Image 1 (cartoon, rainbow, N blue to C red):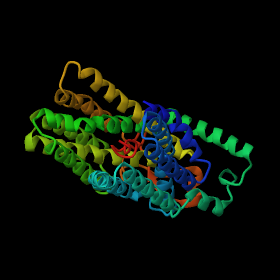
Image 2: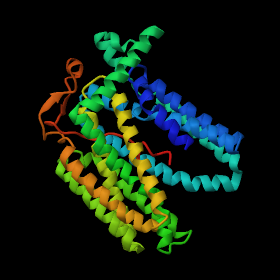
Image 3: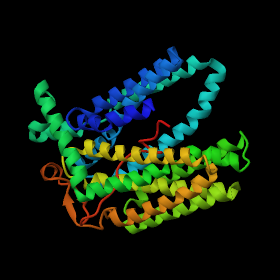
Image 4: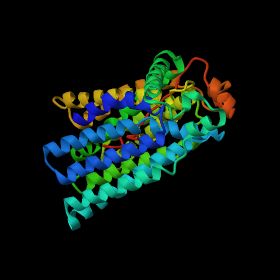
Length: 398
């Protein structure tokens, strides 16, 4: 609860900071906070230590959410390559999942050979490397400022000016997320597709109910993660899917999820993994569509707003499983979750913006037009999706 509440409270406010200061600075701060969380766990492995650590991790995740996506998209737009966002973001998510698969057995080995503090020390070291790598990333805002001298991007403003710009960006982002039809629809689609994927947390329990032992259950989970790796890695190839096609993909994912969980066994778990892969692919595609329809200067704020909506849906899923488990098995609950996922498929088909080459081509924003002349696809009156999560970005901490 401490972790979730911290993320909720700071998700959108931290996104607004990413629209007024150097985003690399915020990503470095996020890494420092995560290292501090692991330090608390390593030095004080009791309730208080873990409580403080989870609060720090929640703040770290809130700062990173929206910041990295915005930095990536703006830099690609500056280079005239905004269309590559889905492919690069997909590969980033796929690589992240592969790292998780490697880290889990590595953690067990470290625990066995060096003990708890060794695991903690290595975790802190990995995050430190992450923080150093952040400094190699470009800052598109600074590059744009250098080109046109935009006062809004002046990072050397005094404290009062910085505070005023922060409030302005926060208002602009919330206004765009709530009033812009395309962005509002994008947020809804993203929240549903990503939030409803939270059932991956219960896959080991479903495997156990089908008779999988402690040796086989991790293999089932590994298969689901493998599906996610493939699905996100292929996002670049599917980024131009029509909204109805995305809806069909999500619907097939819902069907595979329900049938796979109900059937169990080798074929059932293969279906479950395939369904999760399709859902993961739709997640990245929807996130890319959201980035394409954001037209104002508060990109990170809008993205963080979508991340907050995603967390709301995820918590609804967790709450539903908690209450539903009083009457039904985990297998039944995963099967039933396919119904709202089918609903999400219909929403995606209706609200998701058209992909590149399928809609009117416009510039990213009035100001960006003069700076980059980067064309993006903006739909008629429809919307797109946004994130994190992964079971991707917004839920990578799980």
